[in-house]
Length: 336
Image (tube, rainbow, N blue to C red; front, side, top):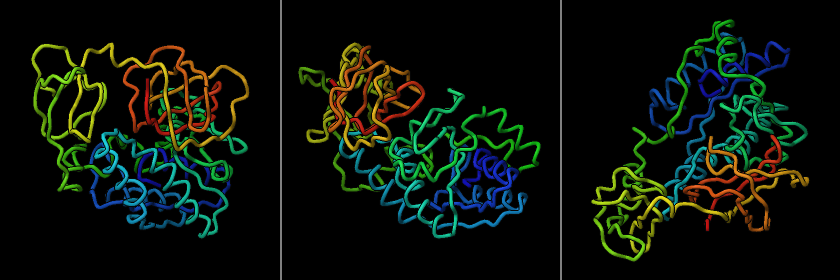
């Protein structure tokens, strides 16, 4: 129970169905949260209020050390390596469905239920019925063994339906705003966060075109991500970030058409189910368009995109769907 409306309603629905429900809140960091963030002190209090309303036991698990190891440190390391990480994937794939699942099992729980908008059946993973809220993209690292022990009570619901249930039940989180930012990064300023956690990082360097011609100076390559246009401070153009080279600390820019890619290489691939021969589609960022694709190899995952995709970003995730089923996914290493 994160302290948001989704996990609150998930717990409430299971209680109404007659399950014995235990509320568990993960203490992950010392950021006090605020609007747009989750997992702060106010969220723990809100989760406890909901648990009291439902009449269920409530526990707070201190997972700060595990969170730092599985999410925060890799996040900083990825920016230092010139990548654009997605910490929500790490939090879901490693922390919630591995570490938290083990803790829940130790408490005697048979299943782990969350407020994710996704569906699971027999260890397989499917999109939520509401495409606007689908969160299956973030869940691609979850192994079959964990999916067999997981419930997603909201997978067939819309957000307005969830809020209606919360109002009907008088839950304190019924009107609470959604968390949209990276929960542990104050002010959503990732560059400042990385600088604080890597004070010895030498990141300033040149902005150059594809021929290596110097166009300007920057104060830190970790401030940039693929496809970025704003904040470059360059004359002419329009310029878009095409690549970041941490070794030379150069940011390479060029015209927007140079961002189009037709092939993707990914590593750290989790295969939930091998595709069965139907048409496949790749999603290259959360809420990104579904792109028709073909699998050229599985280890490492190599995809051919049957329509060009813009700004395929190393460090982000690529997932492959067959129909509404998420078959596999991994971390983008390279695109061409």
